[in-house]
Image 1 (tube, one colour):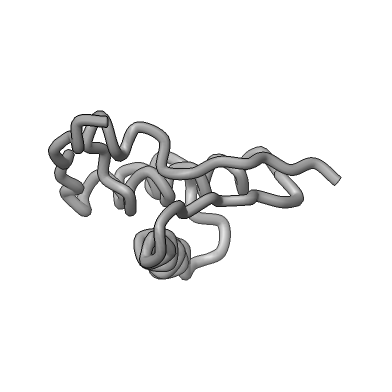
Image 2: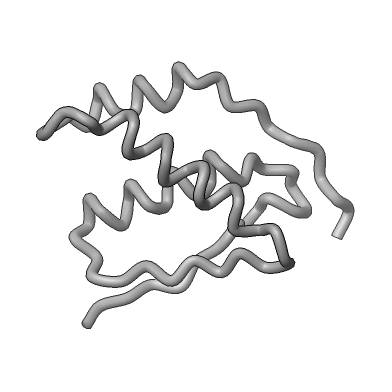
Length: 88
């Protein structure tokens, strides 16, 4: 079984957007046909951004066979903002 361990890389020191980071990683894993994505959410409460990303992905892909370009355009249209680094 192929699996990848990932998480909110770049969302602490560089202030990345956790929902966007999770969303893009889940999309990439699905596109790659990955059997198992292990998403490390860190501190308690960290799973909320992952859950939000999964809900958004489900909403954006309601239609079967949504084209990659359309999906990426829909993600971009969400207007995700970059955060502020936490200094670690």
